[in-house]
Image 1 (tube, rainbow, N blue to C red):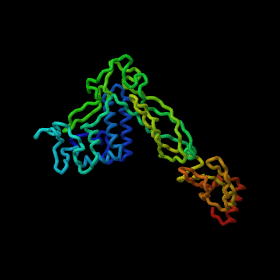
Image 2 (cartoon, helix red, strand yellow):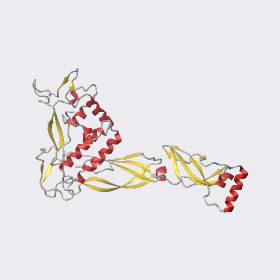
Image 3 (cartoon, rainbow, N blue to C red):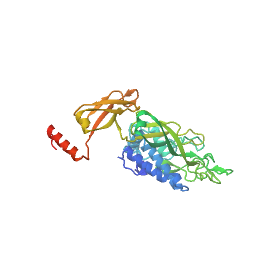
Image 4 (tube, one colour):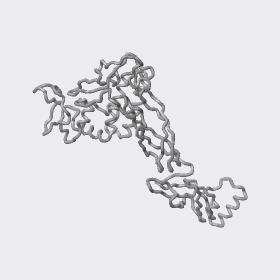
Amino acid sequence: MAQGKDFYAVLGVSEKATADEIKKQYRRLAKQHHPDSNKGDAKSGERFKEISEAYNVLGDAKKRAQYDEMRRLGAFGDFVRRPGGGATGGFRGAGARPGARPGAGTPPKFEEFDVGGFGGLGDLFSSMFGGGAQRQRPSEPEKGQSIETTLEVPFRVAAVGGKVPVELEVNEECAVCGGSGAAKGAKVSSCPECGGRGSISFGQGGFAVNRPCPMCLGKGSVASEKCHNCEGLGAKRERKKVLITVPPGTDTDGKIRLKGQGGRGVRGGPPGDLVITFKVEPDKFYSRDGLDLIAHVPVNIAQATLGSKVSVKTLDEKKVTIGIPAGTPSGKRFRVRGQGIEKDGKKGDLLVEVRVDAPHDLSDEARAAMEAFAREAGLKY
């Protein structure tokens, strides 16, 4: 790919990588290059933003499909199809002179080009190459960091619902400098490297490629003295406690999104979201099958052979009595209607599964009696 950005190369994954593989690689690289772990390293800051930009496309199924289609059609190589067919060795602006080099003159709007009938690609082109893109000004409010985390919850809390506290580490706007990165009384001026835009552009083939400014890290301004609380980054890693409401009937890999519970917004922007993925801990007594609750009840060999009654607790701590017929085998299940897990107006059943426990240590008299029983019943041993 001669021109543009190879987002697969940026993340170091194959074009055939699954969504989970891409997500895992992004998290590994983001953790490695996060500004909090590389303070004062402008290259790591730039690398972090480059990784985030790549994941913004490849981590979204729709954007990734568009990106792959453009790659297939050669949109990042030496030609792009124009409406009506034909090809050009690069983009030529509407005001370009005949014979001028590709890319000369006014940069075109990417919506003007027909990329094999795969419409709606103008925004994606613009976000990747900067041509005609409406970039956010550094002075505008920005939404806070959205956070994804996995929360382990006890089996019974997941089944009936409840509240679980969780402590998160988030990027918060620095409370001392208000996100400016400047010390109190310091002079803040427009960044001389990017002219206050927060990004720098350089030519690549027929395109102008934007990158976050390495001097101001995308803020568009620099201070004569850095804030000592955040070391000029404008944000700090903070611990945040949140009480999570677990919906009834929650299962492993279930997700909830809590609006406004993520990182604090920058320059008055709204807070980000918190996305919780649940992992349900196993229970020593219960398991589940959909909305059916399975209770594993041990009985001894005499109960299974002669018949008996056993009491079982439901999720709401009530007791139900189950009759065990004589000759019940291990693994036999007995159904109690309407005593399972409730979710979305539906309720499962309680399945009582009998597990026959054979005695391990027998006295001589007990062993002799068992052998006599086996002979009488015609059982092999």
